[in-house]
Length: 131
Image 1 (cartoon, rainbow, N blue to C red):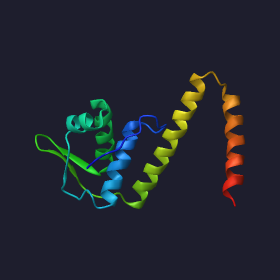
Image 2: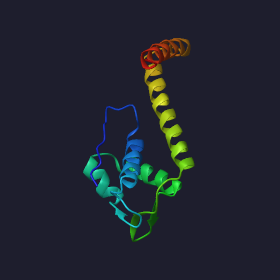
Image 3: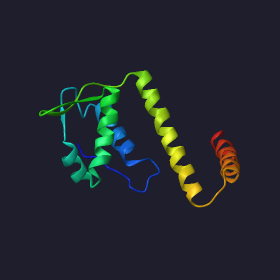
């Protein structure tokens, strides 16, 4: 399992890890019962903080995709059903929007400016993609 992380992406790294593991499961590259790398191993492999990997594993465990067994390791438990996939998609969308809003706010834009720019860009994007 070779994860690729984009540190410049607006998607949080822990979400990128989750998405990668979901993709590996969906593609059959990770099967139920298969052991995942330890948090420490994966963090070293993709060069991220241990807490970032721990958060991704926590979220995957909470979703029922993996299971951590004390003293034995972390294992794939199964694939997501349609409802879980939709919740995951919505959480990802909100993470992207939140990251964008945080960046715009940190650059000094007001909520009114952000909203106006978003609406303008959404209109342009919709016009471009309706063809």
